[in-house]
Length: 389
Image 1 (cartoon, rainbow, N blue to C red):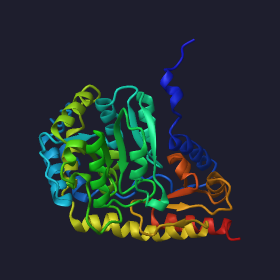
Image 2 (image 1 turned 90 degrees about the horizontal axis):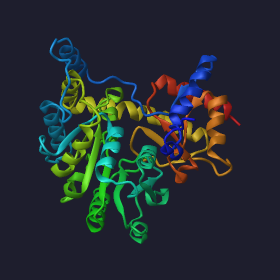
Image 3 (image 1 turned 180 degrees about the horizontal axis):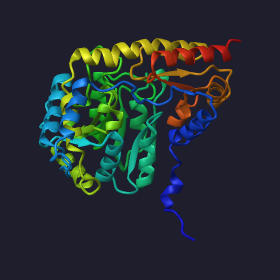
Image 4 (image 1 turned 120 degrees about the vertical axis):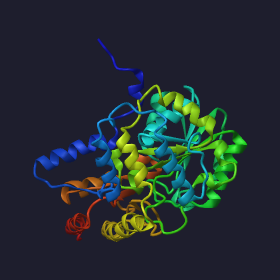
């Protein structure tokens, strides 16, 4: 009898892949579920971005294979973007690699830097793909705690007390998903020092620095020496309303880029040229566009999400950033799924239980801000009706 590869035993179907099938069935039954679960922006990219895509897609010579390294126009736009917003200088020819989204980058970086059996440091709670892809590729997962009492930042004393023998990578993600914990310059300086001391590569996932952030945009690459021991991902999915376009990037030193390119060039054949040109245009979005799309729109929705949290009896940090709201469930609720399943089946609203991000998330829920105001208001009304007592 044919059997699947052994690696399938180490992972389960992605939570949202499984749960969305259930939600689809409920909708087919006429339940009209409002999803406040996934961080998929519901607004369009800028008008200029779409116009460039349409203009170039009409050209007869635009449909061939493209270089895996990305076209020069896109790489240059990415370098200008980092200089403009983060004050980080990158060589577009050697220190940038466009990606088909950050999820792809997790795969390529792990393949390029880790052998089977190597150890990787993964945050708990954290993005599930850091864990699942590492398991699929044969790495040993070493979790490090992120706790509310420490502002969802690593405990460096705890890290130093660990046996770090064989650790190759450390995954970080700030502004943090799912917790909304903020990036700070001091945090990045400590991470770089930790990486240098232990010869570990820090991979910082940075897609949320524009969401609900009027202040300085931070990058780990702003720290002197970071480029030699750090890789930073950035994505257009959140900041430019382009989740389905699958355009991201990584920035690091030229040696790491070449190692990663060696893997990537054996897996894909480049991105559609008109899409790359449109992405390059999107990087030119004005500060006014970012203010409206990434701050004003989400600020309104955030207030509604906070009202939902309050209705559910949850507590939350009002200073958190990103396109989600993360809150702690009341002590009298025995299990987070008792709450999220009641909200789904009685209020007909889909919210995310925090346990999917790790054991340190088991007393938390996450609400996405990626729904129109009227949908979120309706969700609030439904939840108030169910939880009115």
